[in-house]
Structures are given as C-alpha cells and as structure tokens.
Image 1 (tube, one colour):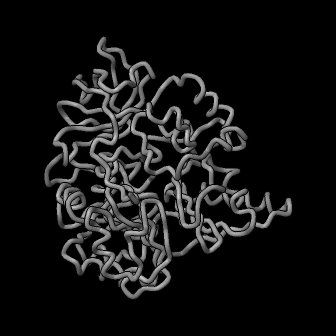
Image 2 (image 1 turned 135 degrees about the vertical axis):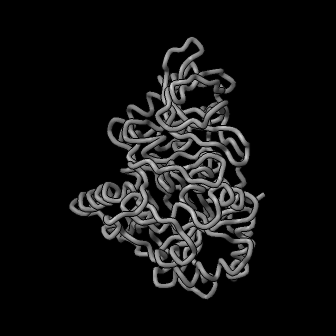
Image 3 (image 1 turned 45 degrees about the vertical axis):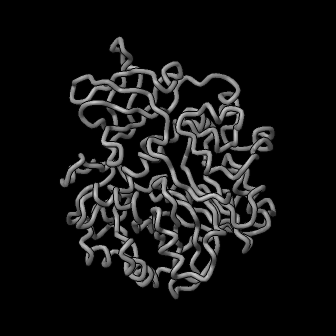
Length: 424
C-alpha cells in the first residue's frame, strides 16, 4: 500500500533530504495541501511535516526515525493514516461491482472479513492495491491509497454509473472519517483497555464496529502496514484528536511518522504503490499472485504475504477470467513470467530506489524499487525486479551505488518475521 514514502535515513539521528516526488519539507505551498483532523495535534507533539500525496503529514516526531521504528517493533506506535481514501460500496450488487474491478474473490468473504486485493487494468497492470472488507452491516468497506485517490474514486464511480444504467442496485459513499493505525506487539493490550469487545476474537484481517475509549461508531480492523500485530481505527473526524490523546496516555504508545512507516513495511516485505508496483506491473511479476489465491504457485513466490489472504478460494475468479487483465495474468500464472519482484540483502552503502541490479558478470539486469538500512537486522535490505532466472533465493548479484558495485543476495521476504494475530 502507499502508506509511506521512501524517506528512510541512514541508521542515525539525521533525516536525509526527501525525494521531491514523494515528500518535501513544507514551504509557502503548504496552504494548498490537505490536512488531516490531527494536523494541529502533530505540530503540538513536535511533528516534522512534509508534503505527501497532496497532504501535509508528519515524517517523524521528536524521536529519531530509528527510535520510532524500534519502538514499534518492541512496544507500539500510533500513525495517522487519515489521508487514505475510505469508501463504502452499498446495494445488492456491491460485490458484482467490486469483482468487476479487482482480482480477488469478494463474494466468499465472511461477514466482517477483509482481504488485500488489486485494481487491475486490461493489460494486467496494477492500478492500485486496496483492502476490501465485507461488513455485517451490509456494505463493502474499502481503503485505498491517497496517491491514487482521484484515480480510484473515478474508477469506482464510473463503474457505479455503468451498473446503475443497467439497472443494478449499487451506490458509493466516501467515508469522511480519520484513520489511526496502532501498530506493535502491545497494540491490542493498549486498545483492550478502551473497548468492551474481546479483541482475542478479532483475528487478522477482520473488522468490527465498537466504542473505543468513549468514542462511538469506530470501525476497528485488525491489520496494518508494519508486519506487526495491530489495528486501524476508522474514527469520526471530530473525535480523532480525543481518541489519539487517549491512546497516548498509555506509556507503551508513541507517535510515529512516515519514515518509520516506510522502513517497517520494507522489513515486512510489503509493497509501496508507485515504487514497487504500478500500472505496468502485473500481480505475477510483483509476486502478488496470492491475491488470486493461486495456491499451487504460492509457496514458490518471493515475499508471499499468505496470511493476508482470506482462505482457500479464488479458483472461481481464475476460471471465470472476469476481472480486468485476466487473460494476461492467467497466462502468466500458467506459464513463465519474464521478471519478478525479489528481496535483496546488500553489503556496503545503503541501496536506494533506482539503483541498477547487475549479474555477477556486470551486466545490468534490473532495478531496485525500494531500499533502506534495516534497523532490526543492522544490514541493508531492498526490493527490485530481476529476470526470473535470477529470482531464486540465495542467488548472488551486484548492485550499483554511487557508481560503485557491491555484493547483494536474493533473499526471502519478509526480511523480519511478521507477527499477525491469527486464531489457533
């Protein structure tokens, strides 16, 4: 998901300059940026604000990026992800609409169960990644990327109009809530003190509406973008600051920004839309075939996030071939794909996006899409695309950093073991 940006510094206390395409320090143009309901709250707590996807968001707070990263792994951190697009798809034909746009099997989701899926185009490319939850209240709750807000909304609204003109019962509402992510091994312990529901009964990728620290009407979803246990809380905008303040009263909780978000997701092997996947990348090339539940291929995939998938399903979608780009994607599933997203562990200087990947003979064979020093592993990790014949874990390669070649090894992802909560 596009829930962070590639702004990760070296393993130290100084934050590097931000890539202009993804984040920049605020200037006179800040007045045109959208602000989340927590904007003043961030400033009051020392948030260093940057421009990201048209929003003003904190890249870090008073703690260093590395301290925030490690605190999330050991305790829990609170992230403001209110810039994400939240929508409801309503009506009897809501599943029909969603399945006309995504690769996943939405019809077989149980009440309050969600799945990560992909908007695809007719060429098989990924237009965005999103989480779709089939709620017990009779609508689909969809969370997609801020950077694709206009594109995603136009896509869904266009399909709504198309189906309505054919007599279908379907509509769309934009959810004007804030979205808070509480992430880390103690996240649910902190949250449990403020809810009546038993969070032990809320496994990964499930959702429920509940009162949270006195704020009613919150949707709590057990998911996140860090590889840790945790939740995302869709909260009425007017109550967002009150809820954030209540969570911060627990000493386990610290605020964290986009820099920690990015290094956490990279250690967890999770994609950043626009960097690791885009409209020219297919699910198979992006090692995301599991979003179609291609079980026979899943175990061989690099960086498979199998615990995100809803279960043993998806054969109906693959057989029907009724999603955009199905002919391209299914052919790749059955045959051989030319390139794949892989994980890399690297020696030497930190590897950044756009660094060339070379074979041992010195021929350029691919490109790094994300990279950073891993605060947990104390070594460099990265993702990139290489020809399939170089995608096997353990394959030695070279990466070029500042015109110097250094060793890299294709590595399984996630780089750091994930801790998603599933029912035994």
